[in-house]
Length: 155
Image 1: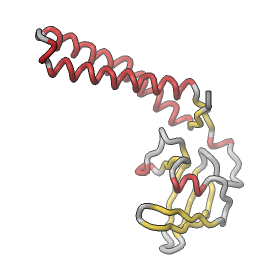
Image 2 (image 1 turned 120 degrees about the vertical axis):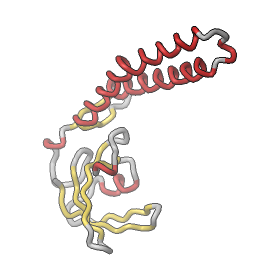
Image 3 (image 1 turned 90 degrees about the vertical axis):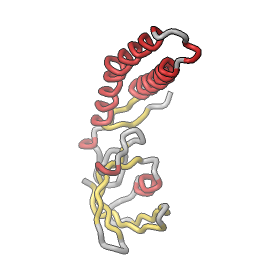
Image 4 (image 1 turned 180 degrees about the vertical axis):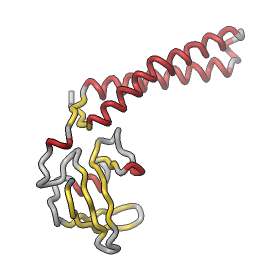
C-alpha cells in the first residue's frame, strides 16, 4: 500500500464527506429504493433504476474515501522547511512577463481547488514548483501557452 500525502484540512474534509455519505446520503437513497420498489413492476421502473445507480455511485465513493483515509499520511505544513517548495507548503510566484503575483498551497489531487488557492502537486504547475528554492525560475507549459514564473516566497 502506498501512503497518500494529505494536509490536516484535506483529511478532515474527506472524513466529513465520508460521514455525510454514510449517515445521510446512503440511508436517504435506501429509502428511495424502497419507495420505488413499492411502485410495483421493477422492469419498467425508472425511479428504481436511478436509485440503484445512485447506490452504486455512493458505495464506490465510500470505498474510495475509506481507502484514502486508511492510507493517508497527514502532513503539517507548519513543520516543513522553508528552504524549498514541498508538499503542503504555500508559495508565492511572480509571473515574469506580467509582474502579477499568485499564492498557492501545494496539496494532493483530492484537495486541490484553484479558487481557494490550492493546487495539486500532480498538476503541471505543481510538479514544476516542487523542489524549487527562492529565486528559482519555473517554466510551465499550460493550455493557454508557456508561463514563466519566479518563486519569490515560501510561506
